[in-house]
Length: 282
Image (cartoon, rainbow, N blue to C red):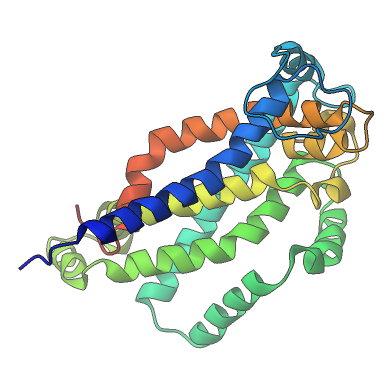
């Protein structure tokens, strides 16, 4: 039997959801307002819903020169290379480790999982010095490759834990049936485990992508040339510019968010499937 919900409970629920929506949407709307407001000479001093002097000039300025000697498209290319590479490496490395932790028993298995969990609790700044020394040893310092490796190291632990749960949710009977049909370990993983774990793999890839796409503090340590900076780094660089830095930062933030919105529109079905826990076999 379904329990009937009273009118008061519905009103309270809708009111709570409305307040949460306002809490999330108002800062976003204010960011858009700052981006389109052409009359701000300094920092905003009052809250407004609509710009007094709407203009696209700030967007044009950021498109042509997002940072020092770099256009928006070049910074976007750097961001996509770094974040996309981090997502691919995190899925490949994390997927192989996750499957091993989920299906095999070997010495140090629990210790390895604990070390990975401990790594996610460490602040990124704690890894700055060893990563810097590692990149210098590999002779890839001040390249996009170094940024890709750094961001992969931040995301791979989450990828392992997330995909391990997905592989554990796959029924062993399905694997045994594949073995009876003559499939080997690699074939079983590729045709059985991997398709059923795709929602979790997609989530791990998105998280790794967002880490590489939005991080900027560590990036300044591993990139020294202006033509290699990412969009997130250009936004942080705007803060030290002149009096119009608020509108410039807002416009660049809006432009930067467009690729992420497009990605989430295409992958929203995968995200919803992952949120319905245990629904890996549909």
